[in-house]
Amino acid sequence: MERLIIKGGNHLQGEIDCSGAKNAGLPILASTILLDGSALIGNLPHLQDITTKLELLNSMGSQINFHEDGYIAINSSNILLPEARYELVKTMRASILVMGPLVAKYGKAKISQPGGCDIGTRPIDFHLSGLEKMGAEIKSDSKYIYLKAKKLNPIDFSFPKVSVTGTENLMMAATLIEGTTTLRNCAKEPEVLELANYLNNCGAKISGAGESEIIVQGVKKLEASRWNVLFDRIEAGTYLVAGAITNGHVKVNKINPETINIVSEKLMNMGVEVNIGSDFVEVDATSSDLKAQDIFTEPFPGFPTDMQAQFMTLNTIASGTCMIEETVFENRFQHVSQLRKMGADITLNKNKASVSGVSNLVGANVRASDLRASASLVLAGLVGKNKTEINDIYHIDRGYECIEEKLNKLGAEIIREPVVY
Image (cartoon, rainbow, N blue to C red; front, top):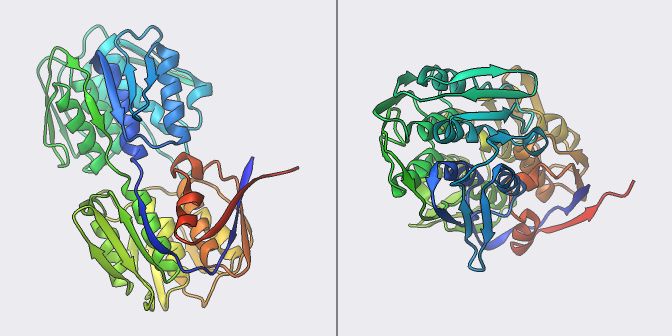
């Protein structure tokens, strides 16, 4: 076990490069199950979830090789054991993404019940009902879901609620089904579009990705290809907030600004100067007086739930009072109790939080409960008086590549050290 020790009070200055997006890399890795030949995937972030996904593929029979140029070669042409084992995926919800590809390519799958951050109920009913409508037979117990199908059929399916992983799973399954599958009320996230673009590069016929209706014309086979994963919009947003909360001047390179338009707009509304280029976003808060700004989370292109905790921290030191409403996950306010330990004035009422700004936060011993909560506590530590100690940082290592190194490059003072019991 490790912890982060942060000395607060430094104004962050400088520029950093964005890493590849975990939430794009994980479904692309899962999609290699559909392919013939060896795929070359680049710009994958060095994160625990990516490592776990590669271990999962390897355990099923995929051949994986690491190239010196940073690409990873993955050949999943001959899966021997179509099973996602519990011990490998109990902490990673994205394990469910191998389900659609396995059933489509190999006609069966044994999938561990999904794990991941404890941020609320995330049912996979949509995945299962869609695959069942395609013709899969499904059984389950407390640990595993069992699927088998002699042949899958094209469907016209509408998601009862927008689901990113549900959209990705059924879209992947449909690529090898003879006929035309229509998926409605789909997730519009950039990561969904990225997956579709990659599959199309391998020979799939997918149209409409990034919109609410996706049409998949099935093909007989997909050929592996080379691909670089897009950059992480949530990581970029987090570092921009780090610049804003410290009254700093931070530039994040290698990012598509359109993927974080709503984040840039919120920062500008809070009084931060934002400069947007073709592949970068820059914040200058050196003379900003932060003003509280309401937040309402919703699917893309709305405000991302994955940025809610970071903006809550930013609002804790802004002038005025704001309301933050979480509509995506019902248990995503676990960071509130830890921010209160640091002096934040936050009142909870079910899925709403009222945040009244204080003059400053104070360093404390806090514990991370999930990935984005971890980021919010790091941000609080950057401005908290004295030192902040963050425990259970394995959460943050699931989604941020070398977070202390990147922030230290900008002028933060963060050390990582083992916890001695």
